[in-house]
Structure formats: C-alpha cells, structure tokens
Image (cartoon, rainbow, N blue to C red; front, side, top):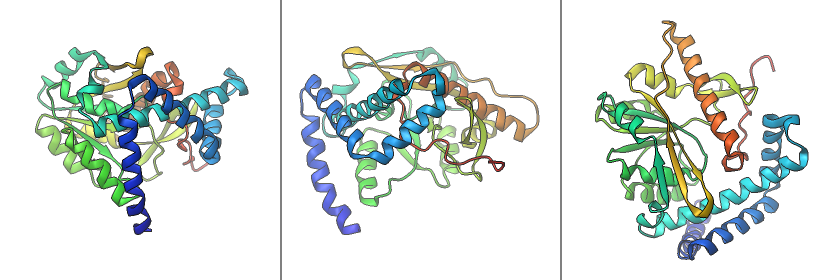
Length: 297
C-alpha cells in the first residue's frame, strides 16, 4: 500500500501543478467539471450528501432542490481543489488578492486581551484559503487537523501548509500544543463541523437533529480563558472570497463545567448552522456528520 501511495503522489503533484497554472476563470470552469465528474464517480459520497441534505432540510426543500444542492456542493469542492492547487504551487499573493475581510476589529479586540484567540470554523467555503489569509492579520495561526490517511500525502500537504507560515497541530493529543500557542499570543483554528465519537463529543442540536460534536473547543476555551471567535470564508461572484469574523461568543457562566461545555458547544453548532444555511452549497455535505447516534437510538 505504501508503494501505491508513493506512485500516486507524483501524478497528483503533476495534476495539481497543471491546475494551478490555468487562467483564473477557465480554472474555475475546470473545477466545476471535476466536481461533476466526482458526483458521478463517487456514488457513496453522493448518497451520504443526499442523506445529509434530507436530514437538514427535510420537507423545506424538494428532492429535486436537494439533488441540485448536492451537485453544486461537489462543484464547489472541485473549484476549491483548483484554488488549493494555485495556493500550493504558485505565490500566495495570487489568491490572497481575491480575498476581502470584514470584522477585523473583533479580532483585534480579542487579541488585545493577551490570551490569544480560538477560532471556530468549519469545512466551509475554501477553508484552505481561510488559513492562508492569516498572514494579512499579522498574528500567528495554528490549526488543529486530523492527519490524512496516506502518511506520504499528509507530509506533502503539511509541507505546503507550513510553507505559508501555518503551524499544523495533529488532532490527537493536541491540547498541550494548543495551550502553548495561545500563551504565545497566537490564534488557533478548530474546524468543529465533523462527527465526533461519544468519548470525545457531546450531543447538541444541529439542523434540528442531535449531532455528536467535539467538546474540545469548549474545553480549551474554558480552561484557557481565550475568547472564541467564529470565522468563516465564503465564495462570492467573480471568483472572489469574503472572510467574516464575528464577535467573540459569550462563555456560559453556570458554574457547572459539564453543563457549560454542552451549552458552549451548542452555541458553536448554532453559529455553524446559521452560516451553512446562508450558502448551503459551500459546505462539505459528503461527510457522515450524523454517524454517531445517541445511546437511545
């Protein structure tokens, strides 16, 4: 298997280089066609996405509307792949010049407290571009990420991420390094939208249904006193992107730690859901978000 991974990295790198050097608009067109191709070649992922869309929207959207959203989400992912290739293989300024940001005053106010900042985000919009854009803030950024299944591909991607000044913290046993980054006055981004195991998560409402969500962000915030700011990026017309930084989420103050963790996590889920509802085609619907079920189910 390791030999197959090594053989695959070369062609993937060549494909990424070719995508990166396409003109901007033709590149996005190619990305959408790659999304169409993935829609038909990955029936299991398509089925997961359609199931998730049915859970989230139910009768609020017709079956035809959900299928359209599903296809658009694949197309969005294809465009994101092309843009990620551009970032990996060409100067970062090419993509960063297409990014606008609002709410930077919220970030400055949070960082002025001297405890660093925890950034709540998701696999939404072009999240790789969101991470790369941290250079425009003047603050250091660390991101908690699960290593890719292929160790060779993981090293390949991590090398490019770190080349842009990003610190990548492996998800397993990340707490110590996250707290160190906060003590240095940095920002730490955590993508909180994926399914968690019962051991590491709490069940909170998400699109009207209980979803097991990692308790890590709430635990880190309550332990460190660092503010939590929701930060998301979304795609706009003309190939531009907009980063929206929201005010810090007020921490619960019940005094019951477990209750505070659950309430904080529920607040994070509501914020993510609100953002996804605005641009539903830009979320990663093909992930099994509701895989872990409550014990009663």
